[in-house]
Image (cartoon, rainbow, N blue to C red):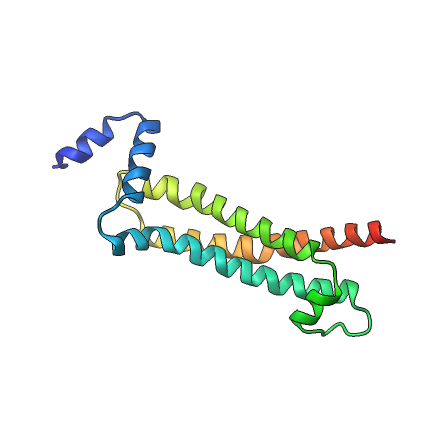
Length: 152
């Protein structure tokens, strides 16, 4: 038998239910449980941004530094334009947060059903791979190429 709170929450419209549950998560009294809901989003986004920085560093070194293609991160940041690096970081961060909100937060946390742990884990890993590897791998070379064509 459902508790009275969940019965009244399930009687709400879907829009009001999402608003109520998102406010409930933000003002959750137990900080450890609140962190368990919120921190995976930040860890996924930070790890995706870290891998994007590494990919952007390698692509910038290959495109802009001809004499030393194996330059370090700081040398690459000093000698190359920062636009591909920053576009990659911003794009990765925003797409990671948006994907986490669409694929995990709305269907799993704002739903009153029991979440599937393996589904949440596989979705989080998929978001990390998609936003941390695939988006920068296909997006940053285009930005760098367009920047080279503008500079020439």
